[in-house]
Amino acid sequence: MAGGELEVATPLHKNEWVGISPMEIGKMFHPLDVAKMQAFTVFISDYFARRTQKEINNVKVSMLFRMLNSKNEYTWRILSYPKIKYENNLPRYIFCLISDCTHLVNEPESTMFVFDNNDKESVLYFCNEETVELKRFHEKKPLTQRETEVVKLLAKGLISKEIAHLLGISKNTVENHKQNIFEKTKTKNIAELITYAIKNKLVD
Image 1 (cartoon, rainbow, N blue to C red):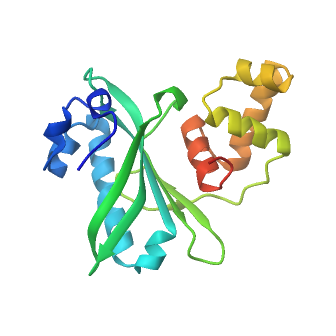
Image 2: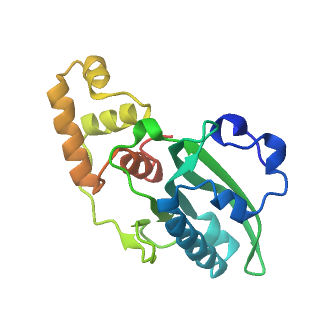
């Protein structure tokens, strides 16, 4: 079952999604991202299979990759799993959401993010290799109130010039804030920062 703007976001018509196999979906991924996406999917399936449903509910996963749109052009997407139900260590159903994030991506790389809220301390992991080994994000310095404001505006898709105008500061000051934010959050680009902001509830 599939919905949304499928005929804009993918090269397939809505009725072609009925009964489609994972292999056919995989053919829409960018050739350079296929191996990683397969590795990510296998890894996260095992990650969930070893946990209770309550633990699964406390894990949020998102993947950054390229996929064909209706014009047969590869655009960057974020795939997330808002709802997953497992029975007998196997997925009963999975609800996935794929969003276009081309306008947010700068020097991107296909990456998986896993936010695990099961331990005493919530942990954000990431992996951008075909051989999956989750890498823990290092402890991060807290963002200032102004830096948090900048993050929220970046998440809305605003560019530095627009943010500067809204906050009444110079464009150079915004750029300085962005560099400080990247350093504090250990992120390398806007897409990673947006994922970080969502996982850490800086934005809705």
